[in-house]
Amino acid sequence: DQQVKQNSPSLSVQEGRISILNCDYTNSMFDYFLWYKKYPAEGPTFLISISSIKDKNEDGRFTVFLNKSAKHLSLHIVPSQPGDSAVYFCAAKAWVTSGSARQLTFGSGTQLTVLP
Amino acid sequence: NAGVTQTPKFRILKIGQSMTLQCTQDMNHNYMYWYRQDPGMGLKLIYYSVGAGITDKGEVPNGYNVSRSTTEDFPLRLELAAPSQTSVYFCASSYSGTLGSSTNEKLFFGSGTQLSVL
Image 1 (cartoon, rainbow over the protein chains, first blue to last red):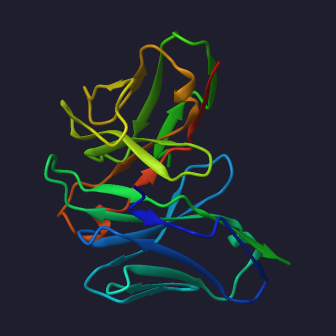
Image 2: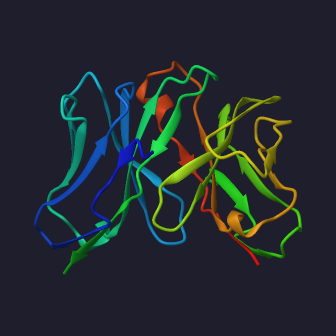
């Protein structure tokens, strides 16, 4: 049962245009959401996050939108650059009752290709 | 800045062999994690630790063991390797400050270990 879903395995965008990556979740206990970027042969690196008390968070060219009623979040990259080509993972956190650590649940990732 | 260091980067095992994946971090993080990533799938949590001497199971712990004798090191042990354990393994760490604060929520990952069991 995938609690975090990224339904688009891949996305191609022209340089300078907007990239929109989508993520849906099913667990209503998730209260913190993160996006990670991963280049080949490297570990994921943190990109941007949003708490469930907000509906938007912006950091430079990257903006994350959260729609709690739809259990949906999206990552907007404007303008897209060739260096943004990577796999983007959506992740979510919830409290777990059996331990004291808040565990991340990851989506399956979306491969973004920005064409020059 | 070294951050999170994993060794080895690649390894091929025969069925039934054992090995230890090493992970060390130099950021003085209390929380450490082991994830595996299968093709076309998200990262799944194997084990995690909230501090030296404390470990707990994640989503997919079967076939693995961990220990945490120091803050810096969090090795992952495979006792009897099986083909189903072919995967990319990532170690990660995070701060243990106030839960819910943004600085506590993000994980820092190592570059991964590609493991094949044949």
